[in-house]
Image 1: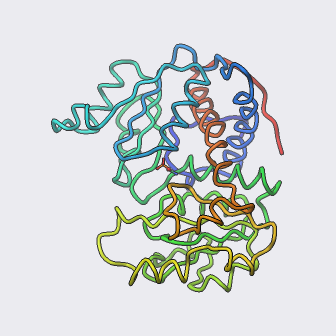
Image 2: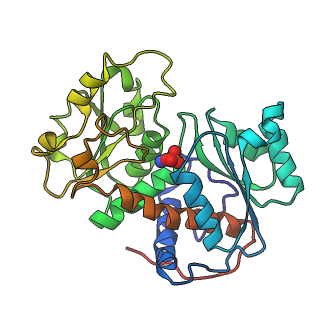
Length: 319
Ligand code: CP
């Protein structure tokens, strides 16, 4: 494969190893743009990116906005509370309205799995999935791959431990697809009620006891307890969850000294991570946030390129 040819980015499941590498290499090339005094390149000048976040977001929405601005695109913000969605307009009609206004790229977050794919089939503009239900969060998966590469210099052969609410986590699914395609060994760990049956088919080992996989781990990704998606009680109490699966300084005594601790955010402090770990020397959580801009610039740039709608700004670099 010589370049990016997809109209949309809907998930990491459908991407090849080469496509993942292309995205990560492009993100590497964009990293330095954010270090310039004037943080802008003209690649998407005259193009319009609509940000449709129909579920709350801080990191993904703001980093897509900054990424689009740094590529010189025009930005439309669709706010659910002040849009015609509250009057009953469907998401498809909203998307077709954006298409009629000649928007080129729609970044869409929705609480129902599969909505970005449905919209992508219905409209000509590119659709980028910014998180759909518990299905996928491909750009967070790419941010995590990029951050691991930055910190460890490789992904193949690393032991990656994903801890927490795997059942409801779109980040876990995107990470599993991306990490396994790039050769990492992935273990998921959490209470049995929060580990979906059949997760092994995505290339993961399963553990219910943190002390078993933790000493081998090179990377630990703690996940947020998705309380807003939990329709029943999955854990006896927060105190018990924190005692068994919360990462604190005591538990890290059994880990490799160069373990990196990641979290997609937002963190429930004291539940998934103790404050000393979230802010401690092993944590790379804020580096994940910083890397989010370069990764999302790469996604917008490559998707626009597949449409023949961008200028050229810089070459690709490899690790
Ligand atoms: N990681 C992530 O999706 O965070 P936000 O919900 O703040 O965008």
